[in-house]
Length: 476
Image 1 (tube, rainbow, N blue to C red):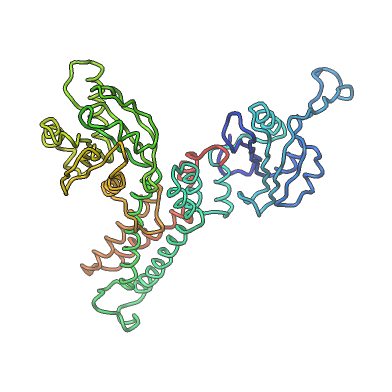
Image 2 (tube, rainbow, N blue to C red; image 1 turned 45 degrees about the vertical axis):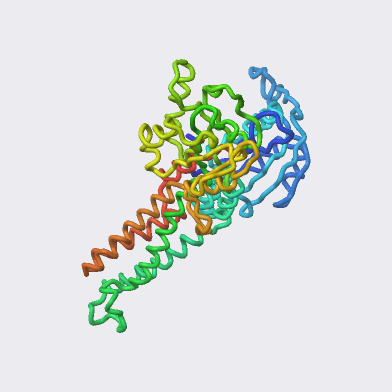
């Protein structure tokens, strides 16, 4: 049975499916280059190629005996291998490769026939299809990367904005691993002091313990680690916002200018704009980036009572979307001002939305106004006036912190483990304040150290690793 953890030769398409100019088929594992050479010409050139070099040649079909299997072996003919595609093979020799094994990346033409032909040839030569994330799994198991770097690879693949890409690249470069290891090393130092204190009586302990820190050795160091871990835990919300994005819904009465504002924010005409109420009957959505945050911007049907069945369904869709939105832009016709219908929505019918602080009241048609209230947000969807202020208001609602720490966590696995370490240290410090015995406190500090070790992979189990890497793409 195929499973994570063996060294058998594996192969997978590492680029997207479909018609492309080029495709890359990745291979790795025991006897990888020898097996590849059996379906490559010139084979000897590939076998003698040094690491970090490229060989030009042809992928061949695997030679096979004649169809007449009843004939004596001496009389069977061997079918001449056929050329499949002219390719470039990038050779990487162990241990200087991504996986730490012998590897080869085959750059072939991107048509499905060429890719399928290359993969069929590799299977015939003895390769098996890789499992999800198996290349990265092998890189981890062979000590090439830690788990934080492993997870950052898929974060890079799924990045939607330059900011999310930069943060993921920072983690791939080892910034998060170094931060976690730094905190862990300090905790190990504190744990060692606790263990020493457990082994010796109070009279034998070194002099100079500051009485204000109670009976827990290295208590200031543990407090410092506790604070650092709290900051890392708090970074998760921002990192996930950069990775997953936010939903921003545009709502309001008919003809307030919702669709015009939607088009202005997108810088293209996506929604139909007319003077007739009820033009937008279903919601329309599009992707846009706001200060590095991927935003799913949604234009909705105008909020009003109507007898039209289709429009009424659209209004119900709007209300459902507003409840799940991360931010709501409620557009008001600036010329008419707040009407009774607007007030009914904002003060009564959906008061639970305003209480969350995610509603931004936007007064549109500022280009037609001579006077404006100082405490109101005015924009013009027609001219673009006030859009910068609107963007800043959205950023504030999403609680984006421009001064956030440069190193953050982006996976739920990392968040859970850091929170576990925080809980352990919080309990240890609380017990210390109550002057509880060290043999009760020491296991909590040790558990915090183990949790941090699990983040980088120093402490891991097979089922945890398989669950994590099975979420990766094939070919990664």
